[in-house]
Length: 515
Image (tube, rainbow, N blue to C red; front, side):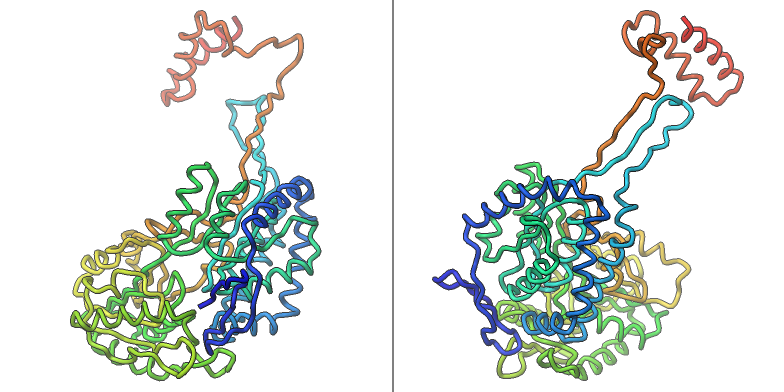
């Protein structure tokens, strides 16, 4: 695990070898405050630029990522441990997809809009405009150290905010990589800023004179962040943990479901907030499903992600390894069957075998607490109502997946699952698509990370019928004398459906108005 030494230096460790691969200077608390002030000073200039001009800077970042993708992927794998294939697909391609969308559509998304008011307000014009918040603090985790930060950075900068990004100290090397890319784009001084360090640095940032917080991490820390933001009335976007269920119905193509669940549970060594962490299989196919997924899990190649033959890389650190080991031991001690895996592997690095557990139940930690590892616990169910209850029996509500061959009555299941995203015959997909919302329920947080969370909406109302000397005031202004009767008739005119009554009320209203 990365550590901060007495010399205020972060030691960055390769989780595949346990070796120190870089030492990066931690930001001091005083430097954090100075950085916030610098971002504040830069805000007015950045805000004043046109959206098109801000997009030109994003286009530079986009081009750098494409050109340097090999170096970026290798750095991600070296620091985070995930296989190179995942570095390219889930980190780089996902980032480019987000950036491409906002480069193409950013101007139209943020262009001010006329609000249609209807025929009752012929002289009124209403405009919806968008203004940036100011300085946005972006605090991101280690599991997707490139995509998650750059997704937020793209939207924050496009909207006209300046940013301060703090990566998890564990992936400070990827943080440095992002800083290098931002520097190459030649932003005006103070617009983009990266700081490094432990929770103390993050705390100082959150307590400083910032204007918005974007945080991704655990529910426990997220609640502390929310508490700080509420005290200061700061807008926030919190993407927290998950304990995401997969429901496998007997109508499914079982081989397809096995492949999909295996990837959804084990990709990134299970270290994703939307990883499949609980699997519920209909009883008639339960034994077959357990047998097939166990056989496939055994075939996955474990090792250093820089080897293009590797399927599963290491966990991020010893702490995560110990947690996963504890969940497996707890389940076995409570009656779970270990079908495959269940132990550490390789002499160096933080590797754990892809593990399948059957005969599990909700008394076990592996079914209740976020595991964040390559573990597939499988539980049998008999009827649909029962499995919906199991799926919702969690403090989290991020995502769920359904594996079925019958698509006709899906809404009976999807509408009753208490989570923000439901995949059907798929998992861990489209959360990076900018057109799709990504929201959590309950302890999974709130805030969709849409472009509109990075702006303040402003309504501008203009009375275009004002003519000096001809119309000194509107009829609803003072004095009120005799107007209650007029408003009584006006309500009948506008909202009554009977035409005879409406015509009568219209005559009275016109007479009153002329008076």
